[in-house]
Image (cartoon, one colour):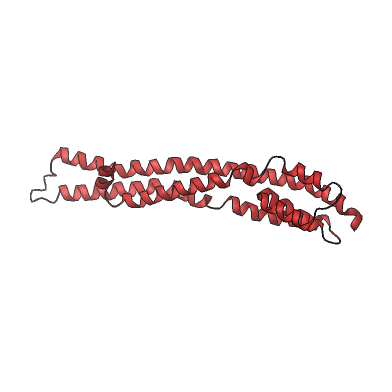
Length: 211
């Protein structure tokens, strides 16, 4: 493998860097987009159950915010409901702002992973083109311009194609991971939206007697 990388030449260095970065991004997103860290399944029911009689204390809201991304969104709604005269627009606005903040965190690094998935084949093709230019330039540089040994020419072309192959090796897993994580983020976004829709009327009922 090391000999192949050495034979492919310097154009393969950017692809090696892309492969390392893509692997790091995939691991980071895999750990960050776990269900327990983003949207625990029973969290909304637990919040509604705990706040059925009255709104929670500030310490409870802070702990909820630190629980997960969904917990942070719900905590902003609870915080808005603790105002002296909360309105539906105010509560919804707080939930929407928190939802945008949560989505920004969930989508972090996804654009970089998508860029690597799109750029890796192009970098591989660039390396192959550079290798072909060097091969044909060297084969035609002799006094007779005969084109050199066909076997050596074929071997040089095969080495140049290593860049394209390596670019695809980097791009395919990156694209699969990007699409997978994008689907998870979209699913989490829908869960947060549905949770906010459930929480708003509940908070207005709980905070209603204080208005």
